[in-house]
Image (cartoon, rainbow, N blue to C red; front, top):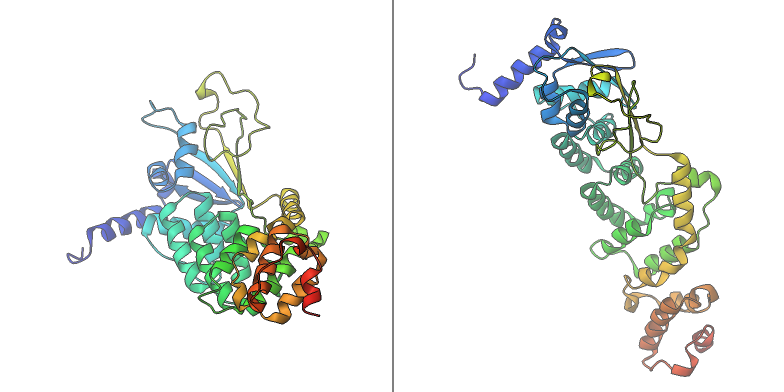
Length: 351
């Protein structure tokens, strides 16, 4: 044994060796099957690292159990190779993240509620954000609801605003996310005219049905169904998002203890996602004034102001009209006439 080696590292090495040992199944008390590939694990380690397994295994075992037989769990929605990387992190402290697997491991860490690995993934993902992959990262950040990654993405999108506003990500973006990008536009020196143009484009866009199915929803959730083979109605766990098909809970916990469990992870429900996106699109006009308030209209060109004032749809929005008229009045250094603050008036002044 290397005396200079950190004690924690020595322990991790021992745990990793035990987990990968061919005789590990004799010492394990949990068998996890993914795509017909078995993983032999230890309940105390899984519970210590994963809130998901902590809740799931607590439901399965009585607090009075000192010795239990093997617990069988089937996981669906996590590739077996990805789960292997997760176990490497849990048992060995090994970091197997790379550009090709970071999204899958990130989702797995989120689903299994392994906080330390989730944070590690997010920090790694942030460093990898680039034009070629930000779409996938953004969609995952929305699903996982990662404020850390979204904040980094907003800054990145503001720096690459010209490219960003030509993408489906921009068109299908929620109001909250769009505001996040706009709030970073000042530091990135995004031209005010371009901001106004993109806001009007976002507000007036009509989402085609095929695009709605692909668009990331603002309120998208990650659904986790945990279904014991002997169905029960115990849905108190935060891991259980849907339990509508559970039958009556058995009278005794022993009735389903040690029977196989199945956990299914899904990233979204397509139909719910489509409805959320379309609802967001339909309500965009009411956000026009809110978005305009985030633009420094003193930097908007006279030509752009005239275009706005000649657009009856935009000028029909009270708050947006007030902002545009105030900017026009400031430009020509005259007060806003109280009796002529209506669509079409200022456009006549700009002839």
